[in-house]
Every structure is written in structure tokens, then in C-alpha cells.
Length: 82
Image (cartoon, rainbow, N blue to C red; front, side, top):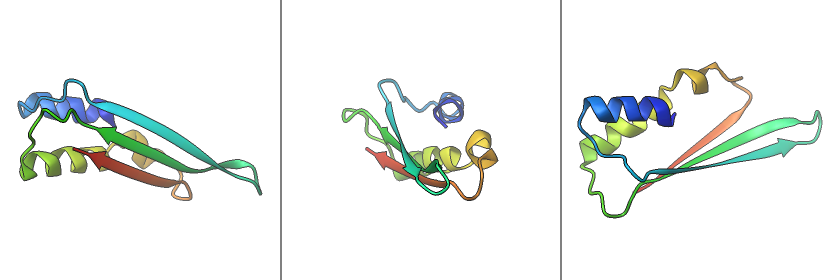
């Protein structure tokens, strides 16, 4: 997600330097498998993103081809902190 967001940000002249991503996996027991992935983006507090820039970044993350290749049974929770 961060890679495609970075590509889009570069094309759109949006500064993402210092953005952090924390990923948490939540396991299921029966059968044992990953049930949920939480992806939390934290953008630098000194960057001021317009509503349009935020929407572009968020839409790009949600359109990630890797994310969209995962099983539909896997819950993906994506959080954006500006």
C-alpha cells in the first residue's frame, strides 16, 4: 500500500516523507489462520494535507493490487492518522 501511495504522491507532488506504517495481524483459531490485518498509516503532524490529497492517498491505498489479491475472507482494517 505504501509503495503505490508513494508513487501517486510523487506524481501529485504530495510530501509523504516521515510517514509511518504499523501492521498488526490477528489470528483465528479454527482453523488456525490470519483472520485480520490492521494497517495504520501515521502521517507527520507537520504536514498539512488538503481534503483532496487525503482522499487521493486513501483511495490509492484501498486500490492496492497486493491488498486486492488477498482472500476476501481476510478482514483488512485500514486506518489513516493525519
